[in-house]
Length: 85
Image 1 (cartoon, rainbow, N blue to C red):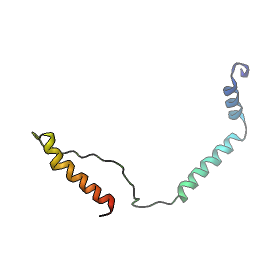
Image 2: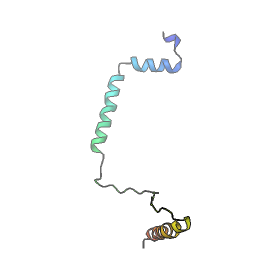
Image 3: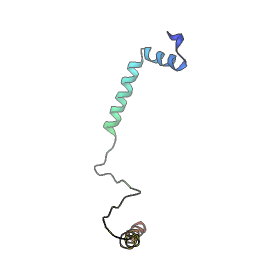
Image 4: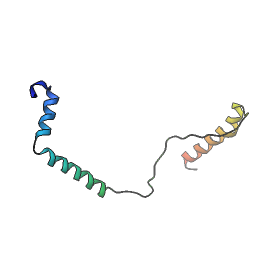
């Protein structure tokens, strides 16, 4: 049956049949569990979000009104926040 397999199949068959495969699998699983246990965690990590979405219901408003009433003030505030002011 091994003669019918290509190189990847023969390599996989060798790995599966090898006696150390089970021990290696348990070792990797244990390392993963230990890394999860000892990994430092923060209760409230600071995550920077590079974008966002604003949805405003303003029926009947023209695009120029939306720009003046909503978009321009938000952009001004965003620029002030980026400068630290």
